[in-house]
Image 1 (cartoon, protein in one colour):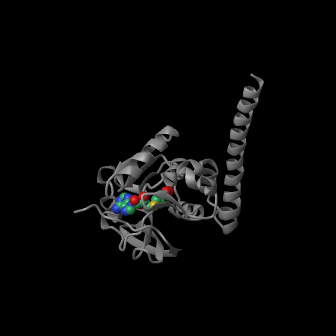
Image 2: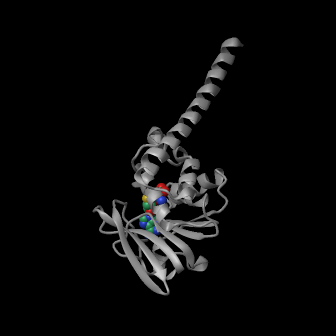
Image 3: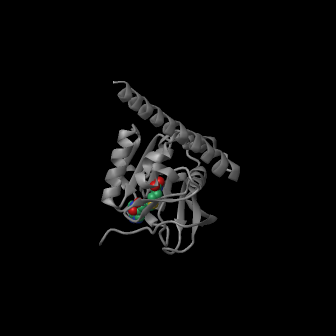
Amino acid sequence: MKPLLTILLTFILSGACIFQDYKVQRENMVSQQIEARGIDHKATLAAMRKVERHLFVPPEVRKFSYDDTALPIGLGQTISQPFIVATMTQLLNPQPSDRVLEIGTGSGYQAAVLAGIVKEVYTIEIVTELGERSKELLERQGYRNVKVIIGDGYKGLKEKAPFDGIIVTAAPEEIPPPLIEQLKEGGRMVIPVGAPRAVQTLMLVEKRKGKIVKKHVTEVRFVPFTREKQ
Ligand code: SAH
C-alpha cells in the first residue's frame, strides 16, 4: 500500500510541477519576448498571460510551447511565433464589444487569445481535420464565444458581416476583396500579403469613411493562403 501511495503522490506532485513550470514559462514568454520588444496593449498582454499555449500544440513539440518560435501543428501547418500573435493582436486593437473574423484557425491559439478580449470570434479553417480538432479543443477549454467554421476564408463570412476586425493568419498574394467588403466602417484588418514561401508584408488595412487606407507594418513569413478546389 505504502509504495503505491508514494507513486501516486509523486505522480500528482510532478503533474503540479509541470503545470507550475508552464505558468512560469508563459510569464517569461510575455515579459521577455513580447513586452521587452515594445508590445504594450494591455488586453493583448493579459490574454497571452492567460491562454495555455501548451494545450494548442502537439505533444511532440509541447516542451517548446513558450519558445520564441513558430511550431509545427501537423498537416503542414504552424502555430505562429508568440511575438507575431502579439503584434497582430495589438495592431487589430480589439475592444470588448467587438466581433472579429479570423481566417486560418490552425491550432486555435490566436482565436483563444482574441476570445479573451472581444465579444465574439468567428474563425475559418480550410483544412477540415485541423478545423475539427481546434473546434473540439476550444470547446473543451470552455471558450464559448468562438465559432469555428470549416471552409475557404477567401469568401469571408457574409452572414455575420460586417466585422469590427479581421485577422488573416495565412498569406494571400492579394487582399481578398470580400474581406475588405466585410470590414465595418472604422474597422481594421491585419493581414500578411505576398508570394508563397517568400518574405511577406504584414499590412494594416483600415476602412475610413468608405476609403481603404493600407499601411505596411513589417516583414513576416506565413504559410500560404490556399483555395478550395474549384
Ligand atoms: N492562427 C493560427 C495560425 C495557423 S497557420 C494559430 O493560431 O495557430 C494558418 C492556417 O490558415 C492554416 O491552418 C491553414 O490551413 C489555414 N488556411 C490557409 N488558407 C486558408 C483559407 N483560404 N481559408 C481558411 N483557412 C486557410
